[in-house]
Length: 390
Length: 248
Picture 1: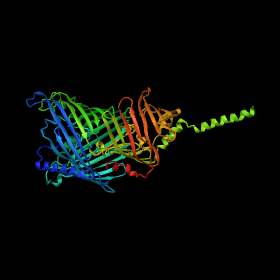
Picture 2 (picture 1 turned 135 degrees about the vertical axis):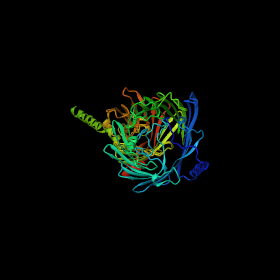
Picture 3 (picture 1 turned 30 degrees about the vertical axis):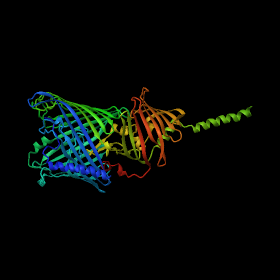
Picture 4 (picture 1 turned 45 degrees about the vertical axis):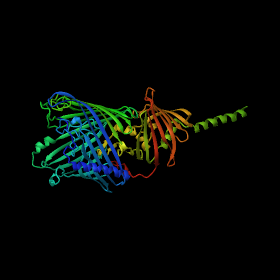
């Protein structure tokens, strides 16, 4: 199955859930009492009709509801210190059924909990948050923190990559348009983990004439530790372009050649934006993920890893309040694709209506398939939803 | 006869000279209008209101500019709070706080309107140079708009890098503020209309504090831009226009 979820799984203890709910209440009350922060609520609710398969492998049409609610409290009282705590309530997305993570009750998650402090010479970030390294909307080999190179993405989201992690980072400006960033990610699988399971690294971000250069390194601790490197360039020739290469070297005695071949990723993209008048805007994006040592001829298994994936996107904004887009992930080697077409309409302040049609095209043994016979495989979905932010 | 006609001729010649001296050319009017809106630096805050039959949607922002090329805009309304746009001479950097993401764009993005509006980044930074972008003709030297005496100019684009091929603008003779503008397609179809609803004095400078843009292709839709605060020619540290500030 191509889909996977990077969400919290069932099994969180009732005690933790109660603690988080108590925290939500405390935040709500404290925000009302003290004007030192801002509270934002972000709801999304979807109703879907899906063409899928049941346990007996029969085609069926199913109905499902899904949604998220996110409560974020951000400090605003100190210009040199910022903090945020963000809690999410996630109701399962039916598109992710069949991943072995089926559950039908909402899950509470701690999405962000961090503090940032700005010193005269550097900036410190500590807590659970996200740092975005590299360039790329869907495919980004430079994102060695969160490995943004899989096709398992939800193209109905406005932000494709939203994973967060517990980390500590120091950002040191090297001029106005350059900086160095160092990061440490403590192990979180166990309460007391081996020191060698800690991950650490850094990146340099700078510009040279009209080019942007970014390069970084990360030691990924764990039972199978490895070193990871990436380097990327970004520039413009009529369209904005970006290209990044990343590879790993083993730190535990594993085969260097095998690790290199398995990990060598190149991502590249083109982005062009044109405006017909002050409102109507058309954007075109094409990204590719190239894995030179993967399969370059069609395999007979659906889970084959191919050498290239493409992500084309066309997005059009016909008015101040509406937008339509077509996004797709294409596997050219087996000739299959997942296509997501949709639109949004910002009807009232903070309130938008959304609609998506998601379909897969390909044979039963392709990466994307209309006729895959796996249980819960969704080959077509129609989703209508609401987003409300206040 | 000769003696009587001579003073008359002299008066006519003098009047012609006086008229020539007082009347401004189209280029002079546009240059004056551009220069009056060009600041070494500025800090402003304002809001956009999009009105349609479903109500009003408001986006608020704070903005800083320095020179002709550098500006920083921070959204302050709930849905996009903390999103920032840094414009430099050759790049636009976007910062999305939820994803902690820094995106650099170049090329055509530099020519886009700010916040999806008719306000260009050149408008923000004050680095206006409409003389180099348009052929300008003075159509009428005097026409009243909201009771203000205005020059009427037709602007025909020299380049494709401007949003509209043709504009007609009414420029206040006294303060050189654009009181009204019409935006046309190349074939002459009216697309949009802008009107200055109020002029105020912010930090001792007369500026349009409220403008309305109506889309002639749609009914019941208009965008109101309100300038709540403006400070110009103030001291702004270069470091404000940096990635460190953008991503803070």
